Image (cartoon, rainbow, N blue to C red):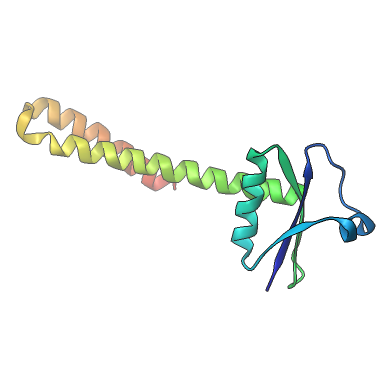
Length: 121
C-alpha cells in the first residue's frame, strides 16, 4: 500500500486532476508517515494539498488539517497527563524531608491533578 502526499506553497488552490498529474509527490508506505510528513511541511511554510492512497484513501487539505489538529490535541492531553504524573511522583519523593502537613497537602493536590488528567483523557 502506498500513500502519495502532494504539497505546495501556502495559499495554493485545490489540485485539479490535470495539475496533479504534473506535480511531484512524496510517497509513503504507511498513512501515519504521510501525515507526519504533512505536519513537517507546515513547519517549512508549505502545505499538504492532497494525500492519496492505493486503497482509495483521498484526503484534501481540509481533511489533512482536521486530522493534524486532532493529533495535536491528543499530544497536548498526553503531555498534560505526563506533567501531572511527574508532579505527583516528585511530591511523593519529598516525604522524608518535609513536614507531614505540607506533604499531605501537596501530595493530595498533585494526586488530584493526576487523577483529574487521567479521568479527562
